[in-house]
Image (cartoon, rainbow, N blue to C red; front, side, top):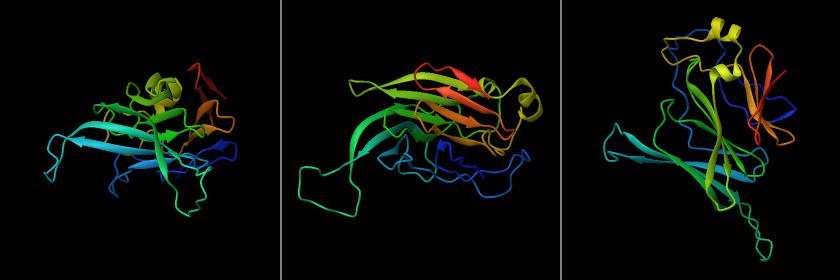
Length: 205
């Protein structure tokens, strides 16, 4: 189970303890969206398929669409249901690490994609995108597991062969910092790695 620390503005995800590389339980949830911690932004995941009418489909493109919660400030209109407008999106062909989990910052400016993969040291596990003023997106930086884990952690826990579990972030805490300036990964071994959103630098504690 991912732990949510009071100092992190993060959303809990149901994860596994870091135990065995073989998992016989249910598969990972079919995630199709995620909300910011303050509820003002939503990321909706859209898929395009090579063979959409078949039971087993091949994904050709994934779009992470960032939506802003609409506030009807100038209208005499009240509703208990949220409404959303399109802000920006990130589109891509399927990556080697598969379909990633999206995290959106409280200001809607940053999108972090976290790979759902076992702990392979040379696999990209995290990508940070920023909204452009023109409405487009730009990849700020990508991180491999060896950028986040220490050499000793990789030696003890990284794997070359896996059947899918545990995931690299099992037992970790993931989320944006309260000040909104970084994406923070707290490892199962107590280290806190802060990935600066603007400069892309990483700081471990």
